[in-house]
Image (tube, rainbow, N blue to C red; front, side, top):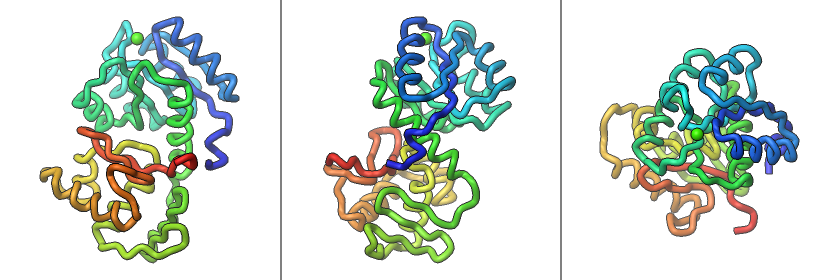
Length: 235
Ligand code: CA
């Protein structure tokens, strides 16, 4: 566990359901976060402008504005990390929002442990977002200048594309990266078929000594994309 994961953060909860809001405030406060909450999109935008939080947890079903609309307006005024909370298990919508600038998402109902893990990952990323030549996720170390990667101290023999793919994902630990984003950012293509990415992911997975059925670092989120995360120490 990275130390910052348990550090105090200021969290803005945007949620119109008073019961959910109360529960979130209580649980996040217990975990030493400073929590503020609002029940409408307009109040959220005002809060972010007046007193920017470290992270926003944004319910998509708000009374005044559609979630996607709120996200767009938020992105117009701030780079604050946003975790969307949605009751709809709707993959196209989730992909659209990730592409529109959401950092992560949770499907309601979610556990507080799940939210805490997402918060920690998002906060780690925003701490690391400065220019850095080295990335570390668990036992994985990547030297961007030398283009070398090691896993638990052992060098990884990667092709250029595999290295780029690994480095891109490792720079965003815990975040689900959509295939379209990988295609655009790693392959530099606007269009392409998912198979190209899947094939490279499977090669990379083999070099990391894991399988899709028993992932450690690389987790495929069906229909959405892939997430690279520190392995669960219990597994
Ligand atoms: Ca709601």
